[in-house]
Image (cartoon, rainbow, N blue to C red; front, side):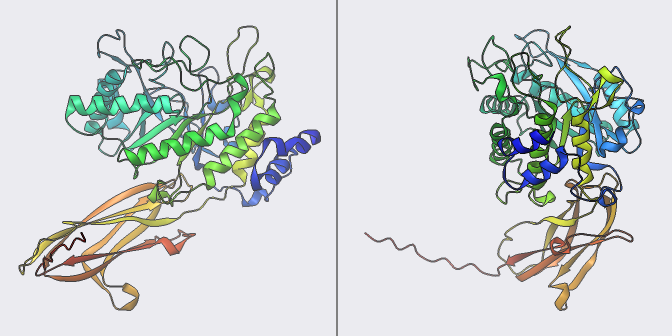
Length: 488
């Protein structure tokens, strides 16, 4: 193990090398008592049937949710939330007809019985032959019907679109066609609560190993990679940044991004590459650090302090590669070969999440007016004020807060708008609530409005500096038209 630590600079990048070295040696970088007091909403695990999650010491991972590829389960460990999945199937590629598992009627019944849940719309619809294997037009249709069924039964539900095998340029072309097909069929932009991606690093060549070519695309190749690229950190980063830019370009900047599968699939040896538990653990820690810390003010998620990604789910709990059956993968957190004891990679996962302290960070993500630019005139008008509150903390449990809207700076005599006091609760990881206030009898003038969020009783807000957002409304009485002068 000490040898692996000396090799670490070849694996790690930047300031995380020391942390990785401590993790691989089994030495905590922070006292265990400083770790999470409750499961963390930023971390999850992927699990297939075969062993009950409740039979494993899963709580030590501090993960806040799990994906078991089902729409409902009785095997839900305390403190962990199931991300419910509906699977799609397209029997005939010449038609957009499809089936779902379970049926849409069953999904609606589950959504009504379990309000506020997160629903994954399919699993790798862009993966030909395996997984959901859908053309863009078929996925657009299936997504529409699932979205309507879930939201009709539970308007508070969250639906995650995409869940593609990797966020390569070829896969984003596939989603471009999904958006176009949706608009052509339904006459509007595709409504998306959350975008989901997988971040594997796989070859894209027709008829070859890897992720194949998405159904319905004429391309014969995209990324041309070797198996040794499966833990390529640069290609991982390219997926995250590229997809966030794609989201912004398509009008989804203000939506969360979930990585619903992430890990190293290729086994160690067998001609695939050097993917030992130490090397997989190093890749896990490096990518987790990137997801936890990286922000971008141009295309990050405003409700999560401009972070690029809100959730990441590691593949897998115990799907270990078996050379006899040639099935399973790397990255298993518990080793089925030794009674599902925690593996070195499970140890790395637990050590990393132990560094993350449970906290809340309430903020005002957006403040908007309708009309944004009032028409000129002297008569009073009605302005609709919309404020979006977010929680950029990392707790699964919801934290109480209050929101107030002021005319003028509340620290310098600003007045609370009549009735503009709201209260609510939010979990972390960029969960939001939107409040709408009807501001009546607004006369011409310049108005500075402030939205201020405050933590509820017993809630500690770690970053009060982002609790306030100010925006100016200008309601002109007259317009002055000036000529345009053009130099010859």
